[in-house]
Picture (cartoon, rainbow over the protein chains, first blue to last red):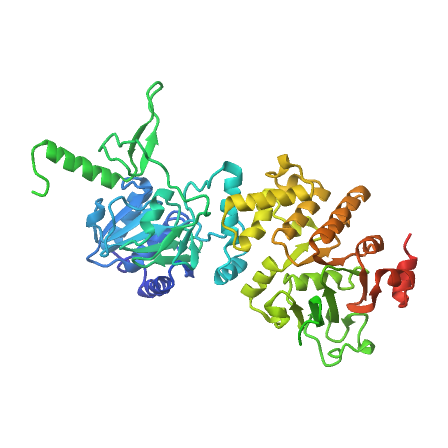
Length: 288
Length: 281
């Protein structure tokens, strides 16, 4: 017996979050403040993404939840279980079958379609935070399109390390207006945000901000003219499970002596490739 | 109104008040004020209707005791604080036809980045202490639209060289520098975009004498070489005597005397200036 309203929230709460979402879609890259709710998980553990999910999920949706590319990590499993318990919707591990994908720090390898929505969990939505601690002043800088601080952070990295050293969360310029934190996705995923067919929603629960990229928004990764943006190189590395090349791989260390091995970071994608490979091996034709 | 002929900066009836003001003190009548303070409405008039002109290539000294409004004047000109009323015109900005105090935040930032350079008394105000020295100078270049790393590091290095910072310390943070070095990095930063006007606020206060001399030499050299106009605020008459051709004496937010520096210091007219000059050791 479920004593909670559909999707955990009362209807007024959902409405408030949806209003913030509409505004966010209307102004791509702009951080809309919203009344972040208390959730049954701690702030900073994906409450932003979860609240966005609960506000938009409908009875016919099929959901996929990933954490750092994995469908099976504790965080992904408990969030998925919670949504299922509160809504009764179907779940999947395959990106192409999902209508809503909630993700922590990865954009799935399978290209998203116009029928899908990607929700990204955001720890720190403010790209100016490193150089401007005051929220009020940061808002003013956004209003005046004054992003020297973000550029300065990148410049300082080049001075220190010889190249921009954003391991993840490399700042992006949205539609030539707002500089936006793409959430801590690897630089490899930044290009997937540009001109993406799916609607992408960002939720930061602890920081109480929502922002969005409507389909086919121009998203540029910030780079100096003489230091082009480079994503992580996966050149010459192959997933040992499915043999995929050119995708985002995790590096693991083996016992002494042997070199490191690589596996797809996106486990759903890897599993799908493995199963279609074994079908082919058994002589079945794909699509049968 | 517009700039007087030849003036790169023209300030007219500039006022900065802290407090709302009341009927009694609105006209700044001295009978109702205790120095620059209105006891009735508790308003302080830090700068009370100042007018001044700064001409191309000149160094204008501003002297006065602590609390006379010198620093407030510079802070308002650099938009760190908002002017309460009055007008300021820059020859190089929209041909000196527009009051810069009433421009939008975006335009004010533009003026700051392209037309002005500021050196604060305390380097912590003007520098990011946890960023490299080169990064500090690049900040102003970035703000003015610089997007080439090589061009900016080149410019920053040549400026740091000019102010005598050894190359092996270019990548270090100013937090690890001595006071004199920090001040020189600030000067390099202020010069980065070749501003026509430099605002200097007590730049040698707190430095020892030999370092003071070095910084003053640098300023004098820059003025000779680049013909930058400067507004130099100081309470140190020796600094003013060395740098400034013309001097303004401020007291309680008002200009009480102005003229050629020699004239003001050798033959002071206002009682306050006389006291000031006489108290010089």
